[in-house]
Length: 130
Image (cartoon, rainbow, N blue to C red):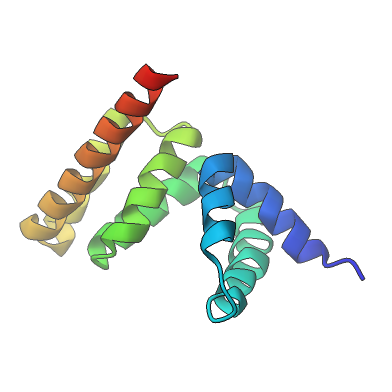
C-alpha cells in the first residue's frame, strides 16, 4: 500500500535538508523514535511543506524566526542549513535574528546568531573537504 504523503514528505525532506542529513536521521531511528519520525515526515514535510501558499524560501524564513524565538537550537541548526539550501543568504539569516532579538529578546537573538555562526563554520569546513 502506497503512502503518498509519506513518500512526498521524504522527497521534500531530502531536497530541503539534504541527503546526508536524511540518511543519518533514518539510521538513528529506532522503534521508540520511528512513530515521531513517520509523523513528522508525513504531516510536516508531506503535507505542510508541500502546500502552495508559501514557497520553501519563505517557509525557511518563518522556521528560523520561530525556532530561534522558541529556543530550539538543535532544530535551528538543521533549519539554518535548510534555509541556505532554499536560497536564504547568510546576510538575510543575520537580519532574521536581529528581528528575533527585537521581538523575543537580545539573548534569544544572540543565541540564534551563535548557532548560525557555528553551522556556517561547519558548512565551510565540509566544503573545503569536498
